[in-house]
Image (cartoon, rainbow, N blue to C red; front, side):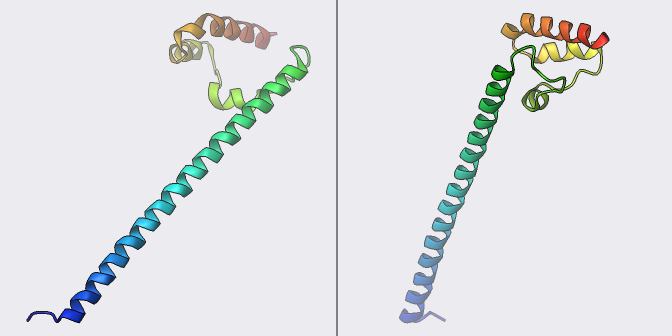
Amino acid sequence: MPLGRPIRHRLLSVAVLGLVTAGLAGDALYRAISVSQSQRMERGREAVRDEIDRLGFAGAAGLPATISPIVGMRGGVLAGPGDVEHLRAAVPALWRPRWGSAAASSWRARRR
């Protein structure tokens, strides 16, 4: 049985309104995700800046014995000498000489 003209127009208007609503909801979701991502990145930058300022202000002699939260999150923890080689492979090639000397001095200081 064919639908009457008024019913077809109503169904078409409901379908168009549904598409417009879905488009607006998708746009709102995209904006919410991009805003939250940019806020996370900005908080991360602020944390790094604060950590650099703290380390620069304290100097080498004034650093506490605790691990920095930034280094702790990004660098990991060395449980033994075997971990040094494992982590050395994950470090970019340009960083390896300095990283190796830092790891060696850390092990020497830890044994004291």
